[in-house]
Image (cartoon, rainbow, N blue to C red):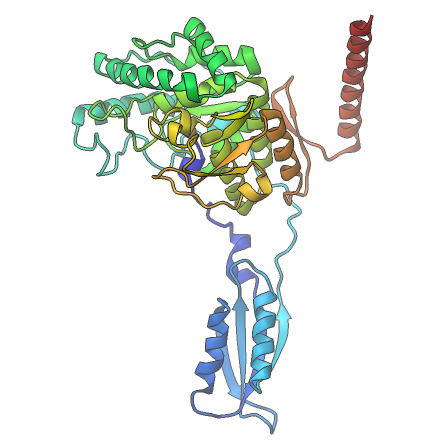
Amino acid sequence: MSAAAAKTTTTPTKSETTSDFKTTVLFSISDKIGCLTEYLEVIKEHRINITRIESRPSKTEKFDYDFFLDLSTEDHSSEPIDCVIDCLNKKGVDATILTETKKPKQTSTPWFPRKLSDLDLFCNKVLEMGSDLSSDHPGATDKVYIERRKEIAQIAATYKHGEKIPTIEYSEDEKKTWGVVYKQLKELSHTNACRQYRYIFPLLEQNCGYSENNVPQLQDISEFLTECTGFRLRPVQGLLSSRDFLNGLAFRVFHATQYLRHHSVPLYTPEPDICHELLGHVPLFADPDFADFSQEIGMASLGASDEDIERLSTCYWFTVEFGICKEGDGIKAYGAGLLSSFGELEYCLSDKPERKPFDPFVTCNQKYPITQYQPVYFVAESFQSAKDKMKQFAETLDKPFSLRYNPYTQTIEILDTKDKLVSLCNQIKGQTTSLASAIAKLQC
Ligand SMILES: [Fe+2]
């Protein structure tokens, strides 16, 4: 299930709480009615928190009182506090900074999954919509549906890396719902989906049981994807945090739900379901360039700050979920949110919405609605180009370490010793020799 649909902010760790990054300011004032309120208003206008205030009779003859204030800003920047000092001094106050505790540069390596089995540690930390339905969910009062959701959620809850994903026997009602969605989306994809989607979809029909009358099984699809690109599926109960979900992509793992939307409204779902995962996401994970692009976002998310996770999940939203790409002289959809939407798929390619070139440095700051059509879409030149841009963006993130995915062991390595760098160089050297040899043979 997609991380971007679960836009959440991780709680700051203790070392990042606002009170730890304070600036103590001394200002001396003359006893004048209303002046303190006026000065405090200046602080409020600059969106600065006051965490302590203390007054004493002034030791100078010029002023009546000295005030000691502990101030902090939400982003720990000192700029607003410098502005306040300047404003107060212009108002005749003697204001000076006594001490400053600035945010230290992060030097330690935070925890993040290093191997595939580490994903077992967070796969059950779902945020919402596991088996608990909100009151406005179409199945909220359907006891049979709720029980079924619990049953399916339990499979994901007990799944461990390395096991086969259990087969789910879908009911006739569930198959009927799947069939309605399948038929309509398949038809829409012929004219609106990107070339890669149109190429891979028939392969899923031939190899993974994709059909109007059958809900495919995650295990079959996972095996197919692993053969194509090394991607695999992992069952999940509901929405993971953005960080956990993106971390999974670093290992070429896509967390997918297995439940069906409620049968009363087959063309609507308030949350991603198996139709969204299998008809929207899965086909593109069989494309090598798209798989690489997705893993690039995942690698960038490992050990990233909360702010960068927010920016990365915004990039994910406008690409993997709602991306559009160039194709010949036209444009086509590749985002799963579009490919599994009956209305937005055609809307996004019409002349109604705004479209901008995909640029992670711009895209990462774009605000977006979750429950309406997107007002703006970002157009990628190609998946290869999107991957290169994402890599450049990832290199600008503030991390005190470099990472590498080792495809042989399927683990994440921190490149922090000379030996590891030498080993990496030797591998690159070996690959370069193979490349040169292959080019030479082609030229013969
Ligand atoms: Fe999704």
